[in-house]
Structures are given as C-alpha cells and as structure tokens.
Image (tube, rainbow, N blue to C red; front, top):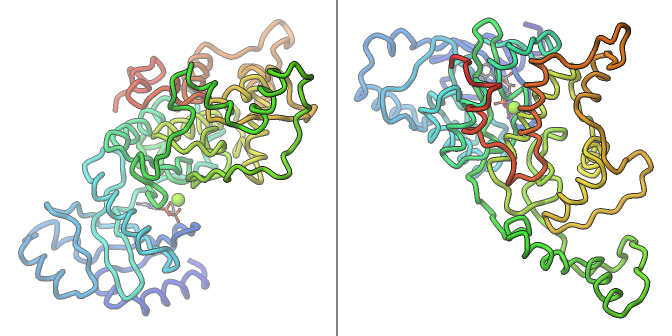
Length: 402
Ligand code: ADP
Ligand code: MG
C-alpha cells in the first residue's frame, strides 16, 4: 500500500467517528466518479458469526448515533468488507436512492448485498461483503466462448432479478460486474445511477402503434416541411440544421457510461426501460468477441451515435431515430447505407481473414452462437430486444449451471 493511499485511509479513519473500532482498513480498492472504496476487516465478524443477538445489535446501533439501520433480518456478515465512501458532494436523495434499491435487492442472486450503512455528519458509507475478483483487463482477451457463457449466465441471473424488481441499473459495464474467473462467479455492484423503471416517464413515439408513429413523426420540423411541400406539389426542401428551431429541447435521463449507452438513451427516449441494461451486456460480449476494450470510444453522445451508424448503417439508424420521433441526417461519407456484418467486424478485429490461406477462417460454430446471442442484445429497437428472462433461455446460456 503506497503512502498516498495510507494517508488517505488515515484521514478517513480520523474523520469518521469510531470507524476504526469496528473496521480495520486494509487497502483502497476503487476510486470512481461517485465514491472511494476500501477493503477492510470487520473486527466484530466473529461476534456476529457466533452469538448474534438482534436485540443487542439494535442497542449497539442505537448507541452509535451515526448508524443507519437497514437490515431487517439477520444481516449477512463477512469477515472482509468493501466500505464504499460515497462522496459528500452527492445529493442526499441520490445516496438514499442507492441504499434503498440495494435494500430492495437484498435477496437477489449475484447482486452484492448491502450489509449495513453508517452516517457520520455529511459522510455516508455503505458496507458490502468484499468480493474477490479479477480486473477485466486481465482476462477479456483470453476468454474462450464457454468461459463467456458462464460469465453471461452469472450476469444475466443478476440482471433478471434486478429487472423483476423493476429496477434499471443504468451503468452495466465490466467495472460494475465483479467477476472471478477462478470461481466462475460474479456479483453486480454500483447502484449509484440505478432507478425504478418509469421514473420521469413521458410518452415517446416508440410507445405508439406503428401506424400511429408516422403521424407523430410528422410533428418534427423537417417532416412537416416535407409534408407541406408534398401537398403543394413543390420540390422537397434540402434538409438543413434549423437555426430558429422552436421546439423545446428534449430531456431524458442519459446517465450511464459512454460506449455502453443504448441507442434509445442516445436518442433521448423519454420512455426508457430495463432493456437499456441488456444493450450494455451486448456491448460487453462484443468486447470479449472482438478482444477490444473499450470497443466504442466516443467523446460524446453524437460521436457515440456515429459509431453505431458506422456499424449498423444509415438505413437502420434512420429507422431507429424515427422510432423515437427524431429525424436523422448525415453527410459523413464514412457511414454506409447498410453498415457492416458482425462476422466481418469480428474477424477483422481478431486479425483473421475470411478468405485466409487454405480457405480457413470465418467464425467458429461456438462463436457464431455467441454472435447470435449478441445480436439479440444489440437489437436497435428496444421492443424487439431480448429480455433477461428470454436471454437465460437462449441456447447460448442454457446448459450453464448457475
Ligand atoms: P462507483 O460508483 O464509484 O463506481 P462502485 O460501487 O462501482 O463505485 O465501486 C468502485 C470499485 O470498487 C469497483 O469497480 C470495484 O473495483 C470496487 N468494489 C466495489 N464493491 C466491491 C466489493 N463488494 N468487493 C470488492 N470490490 C468492490
Ligand atoms: Mg462503478
């Protein structure tokens, strides 16, 4: 443990009343946008393991003015814990949201359970069992398809129970799914951006019947100009960026990590569902199959959208934009009409050539099955995307022991 980390841990111990009576800090294991995470030993572990008495525990907690009691049944204890120190700059509502959702998910398989949480002044810490795992960058290049099946079975098992509770995780990515290749098990963490499905729901064109959609799309500036020109028998105006666009700008939750955002998030769909998480899982699978991480590397949402256009092609991306009531225009010469097939992309990424020497090459049978599953996750239209329940019944995941 280097000096800077030691200093940081010492400052934390001094600032958080009585923390060192309960936990011995071992190391700093994570530093994210919203928190710092430490590995620690629970000094009362033996006590809770052997003679845990709920009444005494209640008393303990009450005496400690800083405790927030969440566990209602015998709390899950662990000798080693992860202490997640949520930055004080996070809004109290955001912190409460994270703890509440974790509490709701306490029985969900493969979701890292919340043991308890404490507050001292403005600082809140969440205590989770420490989960031994390996850094994604150390193994994604070496994963075989059978190893991927086990990984995704574990991930989709977690996500299925999250979605059953009508919770959208919103930030599915490798650093939030702690995986141990040795144990062949993973746990989902970080509900900092998660929300209940339907929060801020507003109608979006994608919720309408297909016949209704065209009518809704007519309300866009360009579409209505076209309609007017058509009606008057005039030549169609060339589309241009509207300078005095009177429409109110669209607002939608865009929380998440670039490169993992579903097309409907990029298009500011106001009726996003749990299926945005399934898209992100598809991106993780794409990372394994292409052996490229990060696969998408955009600076912003427009860039991210263009990256998708390069693969899916102009035609399909225009359709998905229209689905959410947006009109897409582009004059970028690199974006082709029909995009590129996954097989070609993956062979290229992995340095194989379909027309290789001796007629060899092409994806293996098991890779093709993985690609088939990935295609179901990376379905542009959320209404046609595979659900977590369906995913677990897909041939890619069936036969994997949970
Ligand atoms: P943030 O909101 O800052 O991203 P996370 O909950 O994702 O916070 O935690 C940040 C990092 O800390 C994780 O990517 C992981 O490396 C580590 N971490 C979090 N929880 C645990 C845990 N229960 N066991 C082991 N490591 C953990
Ligand atoms: Mg995280």
